[in-house]
Length: 219
Image (cartoon, rainbow, N blue to C red):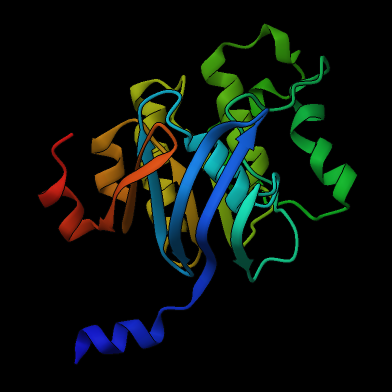
């Protein structure tokens, strides 16, 4: 009864059926079938070049599938964390607030403060370490305080202390948000994820809930 109740309560946010994505007739994603559940954290995993970033962009409607059925309750893309985000050769503060200026959106500085970035505000972006830049990029996306998060390897370039803070903050965020993210690190994935998708060469090899995914996973 509990399982049936969960099925009824869970609402599908995005549905993909027989999705293909090609560039110059080369298959990047093949025969993708999946549902993203609202209010859950879905983690996309796989080796470099497996299609994780492409699938994330497709789920967020930044790119369109070549064929197949795509359905989403989202009317348009939401601001997302890319692997190579936009950097402007201005101050940290300018880079942090640029999306807010474009979208005329009131920002939430919670993550900016948690990452203790105020002391960097007047520095030039190109003077920062890669880890510091990543914390700016994450805080910039989180400043929108949106209900849906699309994050492409959010822990890249972070030191261990910052990574731990990221995990703690995401665990708190997931209580009231839908998160779709790509990760390499299985230990982080286990701490955050509810549902897991493993890609290889643009195909889903395995997708399942936390309880079942790691029982089956042996790649």
